[in-house]
Length: 468
Ligand code: ATP
Ligand code: MN
Image (cartoon, rainbow, N blue to C red; front, side):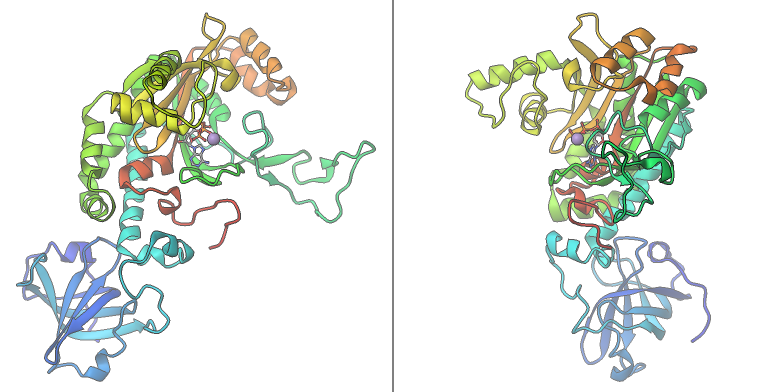
């Protein structure tokens, strides 16, 4: 076969130098045709669109084409031609075909179109080859680029917080332990407690549930930072919105208060959504067509409208009024309860029909580090709630007062010896600061319109499932 420089299919489809011989490589999606001509649709992952290769059967034998079946990997030399077919502008008149790898039609699991998403999860090692997952993972890449671009443009620094941590003040009960100890032969002390002195770190260690505490250390030095890394939660919640391993983006900013923090959250989400419409429109349109025909309207709506801001207390009042008017919820509503997804979705989807930022939650249902309000009852927390998803962001202004912070930590049984380094930021040069955490896969759910969080990460980790 002649050695011709390969052209990526996304680029080849845009070329107009018809008559030129080029090379493309990719995986066969379909082959059809008749006695005289064969049409091979080839995809190389660079775009949702296939390129059509036209094979003149007077130049190729049936024998040569037999292994060119769905899933096979091929290299094709051919003349770039203006296409007469509908829905494509460019095709390739094959001059030479080389087969790298066949895919036995009896065994290749991605034969026909229209597999269910549930089935595709069972073959997560192959599903990136489908149109749907190709689109999702190209969008995922783009969203990661948008995240870095947004913060870089605004002068934030990407700050790497640890993945293995010995601080568990945030995630009590939902952390994955990390150890090199022999589990068949655990050393115990006289009280029956495990002796960690011989373990790798000499103390209990776990995978992080959030980079925030360390992120605050960064913000109190560099001014504005963000983290973007894997996060682990051993919560046994088998929902379409929870993973055991997910990616979180956590900006943390010195010298800003809750109002600016809310604006930052809104600007950030709008920037990412806008990026998707600008840079991934073909993939977004494909997903809209396949799964959710209101997707693009919803994305545009979020870019064009301010998020509604209201307090938790006002939110509760709206929910109570709704109940008076006959709306039924599974879980009870009263001041002090943590809002359930059904309540959040009522506010967003039924009442305001807009993304909502709820603030000033009861301190009892929020973390120790959130800034306490003067009322003694609420803290400056903020949750951003989105249509179809519920909570997409959780954040707060942080308590900068050493005394109030230590007092609250004590009330919540967090030993000072575990957070002495965190408290030092309040001891030395403390300042108002705020931040939030956005679950990357929740953003992905919103942007792709997919329904299940297992379908927006290549290899989902959920209870009882860590295959691939
Ligand atoms: P939820 O109430 O939905 O469980 P949370 O209150 O536990 O969320 P935070 O601890 O505030 O969430 O984490 C910040 C963000 O991380 C959330 O707003 C959400 O976008 C995301 N997130 C939290 N838990 C998960 C999870 N198990 N899988 C995927 N994303 C998550
Ligand atoms: Mn949670």
